[in-house]
Image 1 (cartoon, one colour):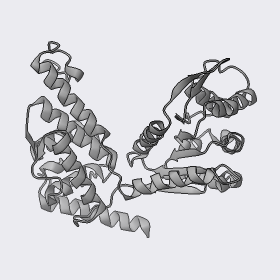
Image 2 (image 1 turned 90 degrees about the vertical axis):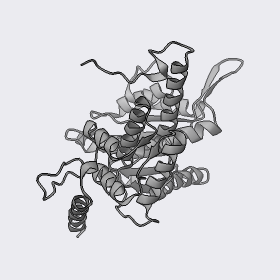
Image 3 (image 1 turned 135 degrees about the vertical axis):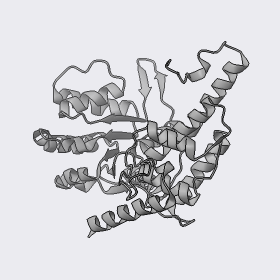
Image 4 (image 1 turned 60 degrees about the horizontal axis):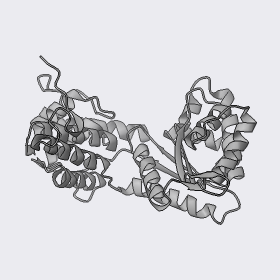
Length: 351
């Protein structure tokens, strides 16, 4: 059996041929669908909190920061990418030539904490993100160079991800130092910051009173709650994804994602995590294009689920030992049973 490659941009087909053009067109549609963003309620709330943070920094004495928390797959990376895209559309990154220098305009940049973070390494990573090649020097020198460069580059926002790494074993010594360093950078540069991490990283900030006071905008992204109600957030989102799948991907889903059994299977497969839902749909769309299939349904979703490992999947075994553990091969009764047990466990945790 030979390995079958899903080639991008029509590679493997003769350039200029109809096959090449069709493959290129399909890949572009898949990319367009992958970029499609649905501003659901929690996502929109997080965006509003960032906007409020940016606006308040213009008039506040202290520079503020915004904390966005969420479990992996809830949309933090999507939010980060949207922030970068929106800011760069308003203030394009560019190089400006003056009489005596070359000035880089970098309105926003992304960096993240390593598992063995120190303030010096963090300063280096930010300098590199701003295009600095020479990152030699001690921690104090690097930090002061960073403050000057942020002003020179007219940076409007810093996105700092993986803040929960400060909770890892061995990070205790650097935890307070990093928090104090972040506070100093906010005060010295005047550039607001979006801090991203898992929900438990909020305790890190709250334990540092000076930093906590500056992180006055906070929002948490969560998996969707399961509901088949037509106005529920889960149904509203998968209805939009279904529509985009058909308009952008030009492949029909039958039955639709909002069909009761399909919606139940999709939730069992993903736990309501947006990232997992998107990955599953992206795989199904690519497979449909590869097979020239105009319509996809339970068999295609069953295959996709069997080949992916998705975060958040509800793996509760059903009482019917003969049933297939693949959600898209389960009966409605089995799906309802799994969702009911998951709901019971969730209620017990919140008590």
